[in-house]
Image (cartoon, rainbow, N blue to C red; front, side, top):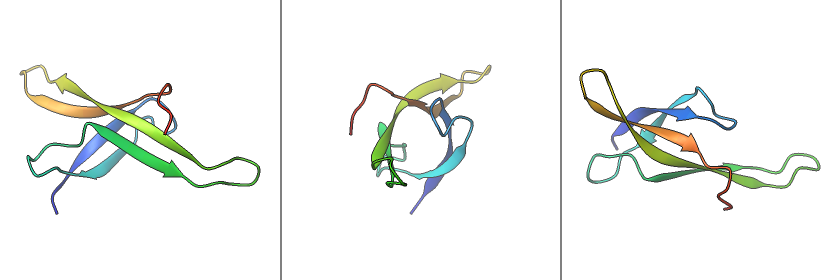
Amino acid sequence: MRSADTEFVGGPLDGTVLPVALTPLNSVPKVYRVPVPAHGDVPAATLVYRRIEMRTAKRRRYWQYEYDPSATA
C-alpha cells in the first residue's frame, strides 16, 4: 500500500510528520482520526485532523492535516 509523509499542524501532534496511507485516487484522506487509549483517570478519546491544501512558492500542491478541536468522535 502506498503512503505519503504528511505534516500535522496543531493539537498534540503539532510538527509531527507521519506516513499516511493513500486513497485509491493517490490522495490522503480528508479526515484523519487518531485513537487515544484511556490512561489512568483520562478516558479514551479520538483526535480529529482535517486535510488542508498548501502550495509551495512554485505553486506545487501538497497536503497538511490541521487539528480540529471542535470535532467530537
